Image (cartoon, rainbow, N blue to C red; front, side):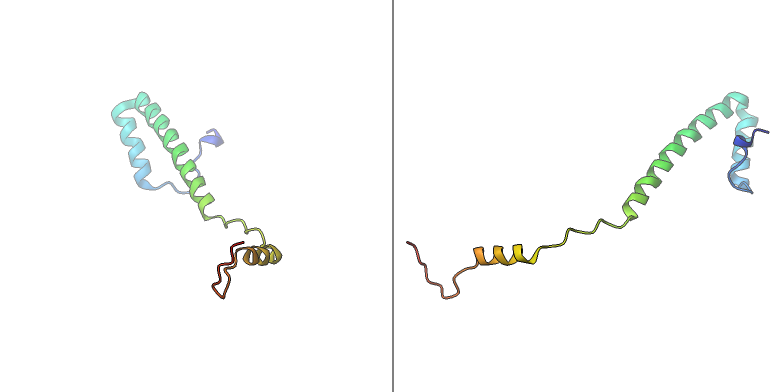
Length: 89
């Protein structure tokens, strides 16, 4: 048998084997081709979903360090006069 056609797991779940044999017995070769086409489509969908989930679980990139001098300059620029005087010139 072609090694590419071997199951990926050492022991195939009996439910999978039964499903394939039921399709074979009821629909023959055409049913098995349909089953394979649908299974391949579902496989692509599941693998894409797994990739999206894996991307979500990756750690977020570290934020850029904050320059304390910039922060101090901004605070000095925006600081409200603590005495409350409204010096409008």
